[in-house]
Amino acid sequence: MANKVPLVASQTLHGGPPITRSYPEAASQTFKKGEAVYLDANGRVAEYTATVDDGTQRFLGFAAEDGHNDTTAETHECIVYLGFGNVFEANVTANGSDQVTAITQVGTLYPLYQDTTGSRIAIDISDTGGQGDWARILELSPRDAVADTNGRVLFTLVPAALQVSGT
Image (cartoon, rainbow, N blue to C red; front, side):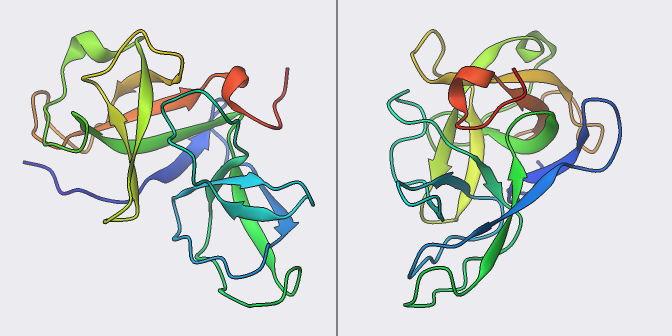
């Protein structure tokens, strides 16, 4: 059984270090490193509060640091792992319940699952064919065995999910 861990950016598609950008942070942000973030109407980084698997709102990427929780907007810059060009690693889940990895998951599109109690993003392998299937699994994580409960996978995000993309 693998541990449930926060999402991490592991590398770019070309094997380099993850792509990050710095943006002004919106006021009173309490997101944790690895949580989904977006640019609000004022161009500030804010916690992604929509359901990540419903396809209703695009997002920027994942926080590379915790939110600063400052009541004044733009007091802090926030570093973000951009959603495009990066390879991410996260646990698998079945709508929040423990799940196992399988070779058949590689190449498949799945939705993201936002665990708000644990401040974690996971890949919901129980839900396919929906509007918010934005994560394409590239491979199972070499850190875990095949069929590991709470195993991790390496994935990319499809451009349709993102506010900023390379396409």
